[in-house]
Image 1: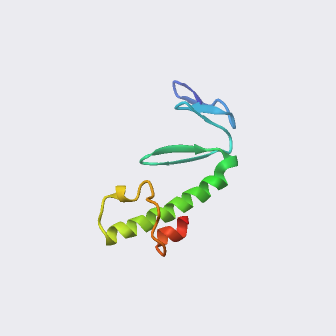
Image 2: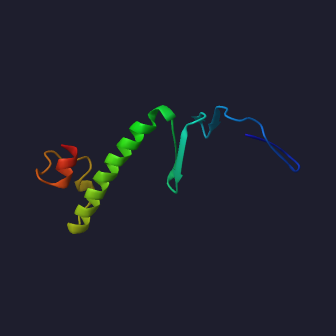
Image 3: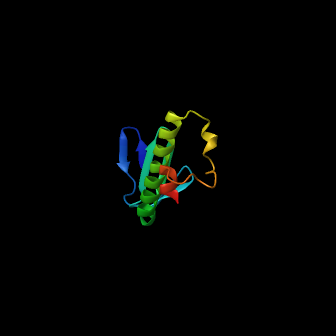
Length: 95
């Protein structure tokens, strides 16, 4: 955090652990934000988070394409109904 006063704005600390909104943020953590919110990813978990997010994005793209071709409630897919239809893109991805 910064030391503030009249016309004063100086760094109070560099590479320190901080707490922001009740979340601990450490040096080298990854902070990602968009209009829906912000998430802090510890550096040691970054690769796992990237892999999981990529897989989920693939699933979302498949579901979006299917919904565009066959309009229905998204609840049709969540949680994934078992058994999934063999030969579909979703089945190939999650099976």
